[in-house]
Image (cartoon, rainbow, N blue to C red; front, side, top):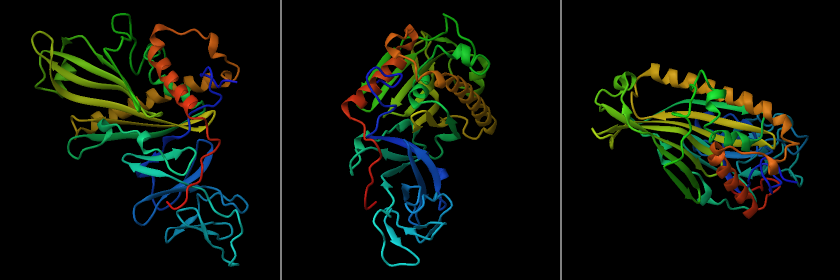
Length: 365
């Protein structure tokens, strides 16, 4: 039986992929416990600064290790004192020398690429590094870009509908009328001017018509021309990293043709399955203008926080009814084209890479 919203895949999300497990700044010497793709894990930082991730339950009596002490990079179970290395191997028991079979934790491949900690969810001992999402525009450069408004949300809904929502422009007028404004036929969703469809990257690019520059933009960009355009983009990197509503302000010449970039504002999202019916949602913002203006940062952050919460309310209202939904006869709107293309891309990945039922342990990290 297919798992909504897919027509053939009997699973909720693709495995053999990289997902965001945490923000870099969340990880320190104390374990952070989180469920990723149905696996209970802890993530912590070793003395070297490297990040390790292992299963979060002690094999002896299933004690959660989120309150474990990290002593010389070893995880000490707070219940019976079993000690584990960063590779998950049980290295010490306080009252016996023999370590029983089955006492090792699973260890997971992790990669830190600021601002994210990535976790490999899949079968096999070697992760596919070519599938690690990389969005150059999200790499902060000191003094040139500002990363801010980083938040983590929990959504009681399956990850795929959370993902598709980010490519759905037509819901804005009805889900976000106060935060993002209402649209009409004249300024509503437009067809992409360009689509990029690479192996690990899908992008929908849009260039607005030229229009007179308003006073708000003149305040931000005093040297902007009389006419301007907005270069918008919605991008999917890998299976869960999204730039939604990326907006670049373009100064135009007298004929309205693009001349130079004035500034770029990026709202980005990382969508990570927690279980088949719940999701971790990481949201943040980046810009390359007015870097020292805290008021602008606070304004964008507060609005983005509200927008995400408005989306979550809708998605959580939908989720209880999806178990009985059949996508095969579900109608689609013209404005669903981008979201449906994302859906088909994700489903194709699952068909080409059969599911691993659980994250496989790796040894020697």
